[in-house]
Length: 122
Image (cartoon, rainbow, N blue to C red):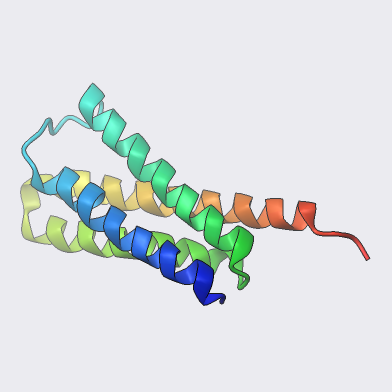
């Protein structure tokens, strides 16, 4: 793992976990997952985790799935811990964790696929 890539990816994952995932669960807002405001937040969770994992998988080395874990891990932990204490939002917490994990896995897989597609052939 290259620290030059790992530090910003993990720092970004921690920032996204707190300021996006946790804030979306903690703040007052619509509880309907299909509400337009909630859809914007869900899209951001999916996209930012995917982007962080893709950056790590593309330029960081290691196996692609380790970057998915690094990118989604903080959000999944925060969402499930907070959801377990506030049972009224447990469904939204599980949804946020699933979106973070799905986005990170897809992003890391695509990032690694892009890295191998651009690699010079010997």
